[in-house]
Image 1 (cartoon, helix red, strand yellow):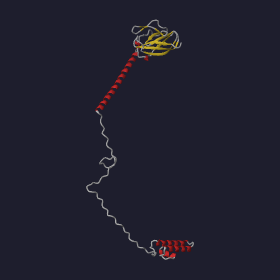
Image 2 (image 1 turned 90 degrees about the horizontal axis):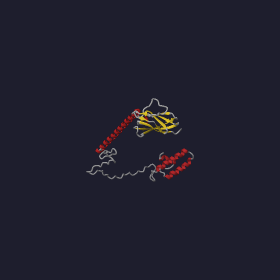
Image 3 (image 1 turned 45 degrees about the vertical axis):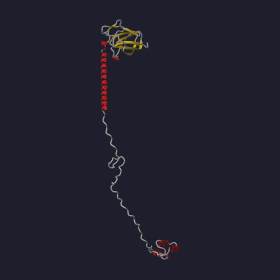
Image 4 (image 1 turned 90 degrees about the vertical axis):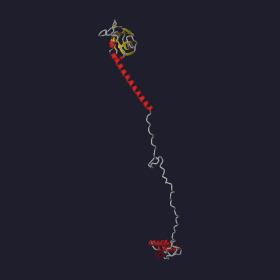
Length: 275
């Protein structure tokens, strides 16, 4: 809505002051009553006149434009161009920490690892001597093992053939039920006399076989056999077993071949714990 049309609707002059426009608006609004369309038109006319009067000089007619003075831009000071002083090269940016001198800035730089030193002459000699010593120890252990095995084999073979080396020979094919009254003959032509041990009569039969005759019954008798390297040598090894000896009857005891590595055997003791 233009200023002239708004002034005609309110019944005022287009150059009316703000107070006159507001007074005319209030009067026309009271006459409009409940007519909303009329009231909206009056309000629009008032606003149009008030807006026009805000841009007018006091006393100037509504709709007349007041000339404005031209806007002057203050002059800008003359900027001197920045020229580097002659004789100086442009400084390059510093490389990052850890970068190699003169290398492009591609990442951190680490110094190369020092070269590895070879083994000294003393170290080489020590390693060689140590290897030789280990080889000698292994060789010595192997030789000792071979000698021990050979010695055990020879002693086992001697034990298996102990019947010829034993100082006793079989006096008969069958052992007698009573103890013999005569000594037995050894393989070397010597005789082996019967003997008594702890109340038990001992008679040599053959090899490592003996007849034991007890005057009384002995249940669970502990028989200890001694071994020697000669016929009259001291006891070098022992072997024990438990047997039941009947009263007045011969009991044949055969010592196993693997009981000892020595060649000669004899009854050392008979312990009768129960009768």
